Image (cartoon, rainbow, N blue to C red):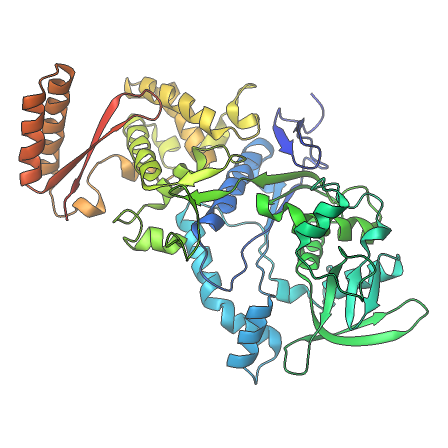
Length: 502
């Protein structure tokens, strides 16, 4: 096996193939993921890349060591809506400080939300506003990157804008693999006369006297110096921040499927042309789209829900959902596949977590208490996690291991604990009881009686004694206990859960 290779295969959007992952430097595996625009609270669609790439971060840490992985997830706080609100609400402050005031609440909420979903904090979380102009520490910045593109013949000035010249790059479009017509349609930009090509995109945009902006100086071909008070284009932000912490070429670039074109395509173009490199990142990874209850999420559909609403309110399904349940519901669908986020999926995830937690009780203390305990064990060569992070296949394996663990098999318990560590379920022990927040007014004795009644009813159902099964259900309902019948997502067996009827 090649030096630094650990048997991990990842699907590379750039090549449309699953490839062996071999890092540039096994002592410093580097990953960049596009983070949130902190104009408003993050919705459940924003949770998927945070969870998916957190699992990859954990897996890389397991394979290469926690001190040998650098994970950068940016914060986009340069946005016309943010800028305008900052200028309106804090007119007396410098723009960066005003933006920080505007985005402080939404950014803090995002950090709390993803922490509740079990996500580790990335190694670095750069803010776009800190990388617009040249920095005292010499790290990459947007203005300098744009100047380099001008000098290399890949950018030009027109009507107060600095634009990227897509015709200057022979293989522009290689990531999305679109032909010219598709690129023009997908970019959704006006075909303006000052552009050399319709698909050319903005690197720096002039601000009017009423609009906020930064003073950026550029030297154009022929030595003409210009200062343009304006703001950066969206794509140049990530090119600067990734270079600042990961270098000109790094291992993995991730994000949602919707970012492939135009955002990632243009990032790749800028970075390669600025540095004269063949690639920006060796592996490009993208998670699939998300729907809510079978429909595209939107405020007009009435199914728009934020992460915080799921965690803290009863907006979705009439109850609050623990972060671990939201996390597993996401992971039970392969990250590259579309996902239908539903109450039923959350209920299934909650039932799975309860069974897993019950199976690993009394795990040896050194494993049960340490969030990095799993690093003491190795993954086998055909582990589903090594096959493009195939968590759904792994879930089925964990079911089998959990059954063995419940019989007292300590080795199985240790392996399951390792997977909890990599998947981000260190706090699973709290799912070892069915007494939930919605049932907090019922003591453990009553809860135990309910479980006994449910077990008796299931016996009657197996005997096809429907009358007695219905009698137990109706008696519990009269006491305010609602039963819910469903199927085990793996075995297909009947599963009955309960909740306090409101």
